[in-house]
Length: 141
Image 1: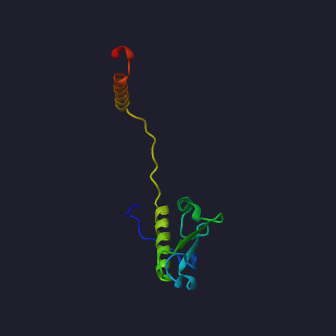
Image 2: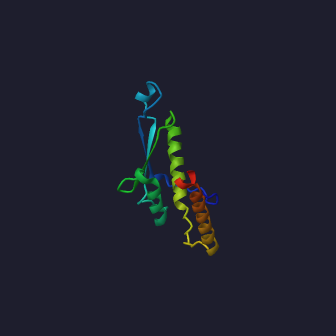
Image 3: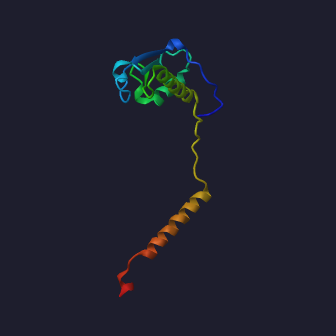
């Protein structure tokens, strides 16, 4: 990810948090307190993202995006709600930053004549090495 992109601000009204019970370590606390965070962000209805960035974000997020275009990130790495909330927000920011970066268009090129000649020469040399290793019964009798 390039360093020249500024840190973007996602409008708070476009992000929705649900707190759910996490699995894993935590003792009885895990069964009583909803510390895991489920962040929901509607990509298609987002007001600050350009259309091409929305498409890139949907591609980047993969299966974390529903058919309606809602990105769902679950954060349950930490034992507190606040830490998990910040983790989910940081992951969302990272994904959006990545989506805002437009990849450079690659111009298709062809190998140069010298490169083609070098490739053929290497193939012929390799072929010769294999020919030298070949087993010929007459040579062994």
